[in-house]
Amino acid sequence: MERKQILNVVITALFAALVAAGAFIRIPLPPVPITLQTLFALIAGCVLPLPLAAASIAVYLFLGIIGLPIFTSGGGLAAVLGPTGGYLMGLLPAVIVGALMTKAMKGGRIACAVSSLVMDVIIYAIGLVWLGSSMELSFMATLSAGLIPFIVGDVIKYIVTVMISPSLRKRVEELLSREE
Image 1 (spheres, rainbow, N blue to C red):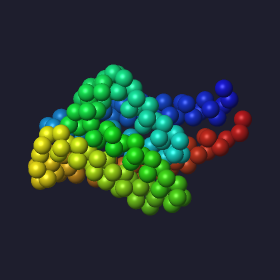
Image 2: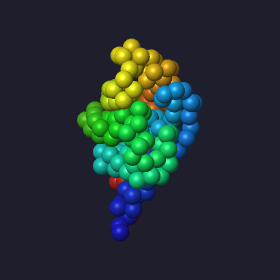
Image 3: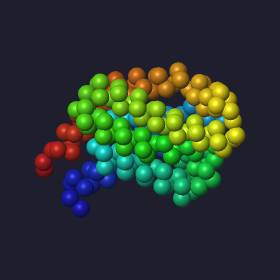
Image 4: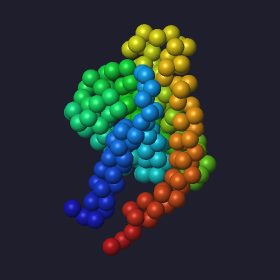
C-alpha cells in the first residue's frame, strides 16, 4: 500500500474514531442527549475531501450497526431504528453535502460557516422526522424534544467548527498533497 492510501485510511479511521468518541461526551437529556458526535461530523465535512469525509461517517455507522457500542444509545441495528436513529442516518448525507459545499466554496471560513449550517439542517430534518414519527409526537412536541433543547449547544459546536476547520483543512490538504 502506498503512502497516500495509508494516509487516507488513517485519516478516515481517525475521524470515525472522533465521531465515536463524541458519542460518549454527552449531556443526557431525554429523549435525545447532547453529544459531540455532530461537532466531529461537521468538522469532517468542512475539513476532509468528500471521499474521506463520507468514508469516515460510513465506517462509524457501519461499526455501530454491526454492534459495536459506539452510538450514544449503544450499538446494533436497534439503535439506528430507535427514536434517535434519524440523527445518525442524517450524518452521512449531511457530511456529503457539507464536503461538496466546502470544496465548491474554496474551503474558507465562510464556506465552513455555510456548509456547517446546511449540515445541521440536514441532520435535524432527518432526525426530527424520524423522532416525531417513531414516538408519534406532534410537530411542536417533536421540536420541543428534538431541537429546542439543543440550540445553544449547536451554536457552540457551530462556532468551534467555523473557528478551527479552515486551518485544519489546510493542514490536511498539505498532508495529502505532500510528495515523499
